[in-house]
Image 1: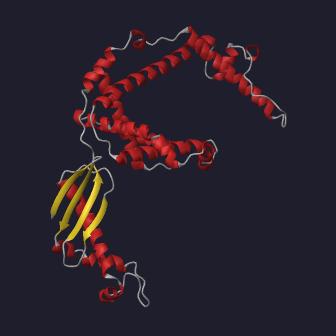
Image 2: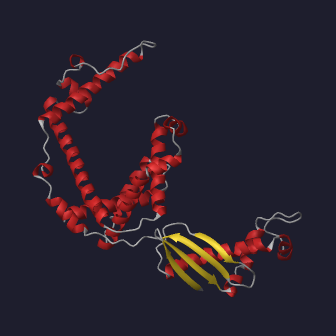
Image 3: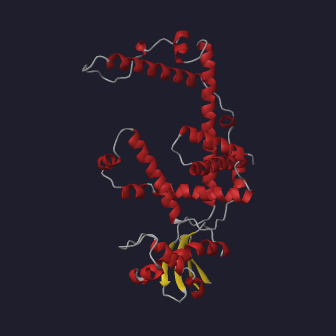
Length: 354
């Protein structure tokens, strides 16, 4: 087979080639048999029509198209393997020559993983981590943090009680105003025991302090990780394939639609209310989608360079948890998601250990 590969802009390639006439001809019988399974002719059962009858009732162009589809379906994976092409999208195929006893001419366009010139991610991580202040490294929970959280809990409880009181008084007009401090429930042992398995106020405060500390530590960790990876992305050079940006846009809009639907609204009505189309939203979120696509490419490249892979047992556990939680989830997609999340976590741990 003669093959010519041309690099195109936006991380795409065009594969132009011809499959020899003798090889192409070998698909004739299989193509005719496949077409015969769907053709309906009076006096014959589908799949049982003799070959000569089929040939006089099926246009040759239909047989040739089926032959081309079968031939390229079988040879395309071999071509990209032989030419070492990292294809990441469905191929766009156009046939340039199609006739019996002749070579099959074709052009295939596909997006490929771009060449990435990674920034010095180890040094970037080291540099970012060295600039963390003592306050950022040693997270403390202040009295003010405690007081604010306890106040929020008391307000939330008062609001629930207020709404419950009015729920059975139908038709009564009432304002959803914030409860005044004197209306808030007293912060006592009884109050904290009603919230959960707490012995008393002191026990509740100790556990609350731990939780606030954990939350603040997680926020600080996320902030540092974001600083590191944004700098790595900015200092790396790559072409972002259009297909990856489109995939990220699809994900953003899918999540948005799910959130709106869960609120009991119709997505079409929400769009009307905003006076926007899906196209408008795709334009709006394009920059975010490009960032996400670049992030995925950079993380993938670091994982490849450092040979970082998710632990098999962790993946199995994560998949089991997903399938337990979402009964309709597709196991293969759940596995891909789990592998991705766990590999990314290992990459960030690797960067944090620089």
